[in-house]
Image (cartoon, rainbow, N blue to C red; front, side):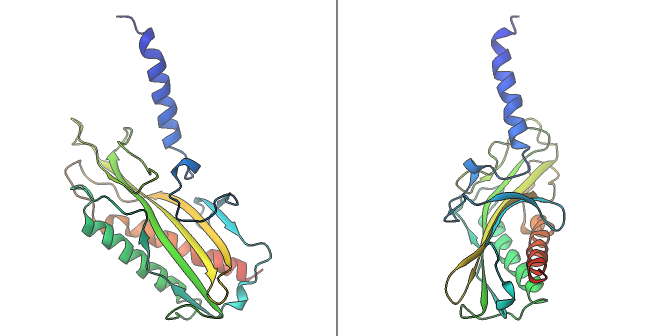
Length: 223
């Protein structure tokens, strides 16, 4: 058998897999939730995870006396599947809201809406996916939010879950954007391709994201 015709496809597959392993959300995977991505820079979160972020130069966060967490969005509109149903997607956003409120309330009183002195947090879940562990996912963090599953003969293998988030932080009094963040991470593994992803599989990841946001705010407050 002549393997030469297969050489290029195999190389392209290897490059694709390497790209999927990127620690950061790639520009081609931005959802459009943020108005401007040009200022994002690679950083390390307080927990040591890779994150893309932009912070307003010389921002004085001590002017904020309370915080309002807007209900997190699924952006763009999701396409639920049997693997990741609408109930799971809804549960993920509900838990994300809870995690953000719980952690931010430890450093600032929670506000009921926008206003002077209010830091507004506008979060979104921009991708959710599930794929066979060790194999290239059918789709990973596409531009449009997708719940993607892999149906193969390797269904007995563990399934990896992943999510991406984008968030904007702005002054509730004048609307000035003070920070933006884009990041992705892994949820809990599923036992096989037949297991349905549930919101609880993302809880540890969402808790970590919320914790990092609050610690980043505290770091700015201490400057």
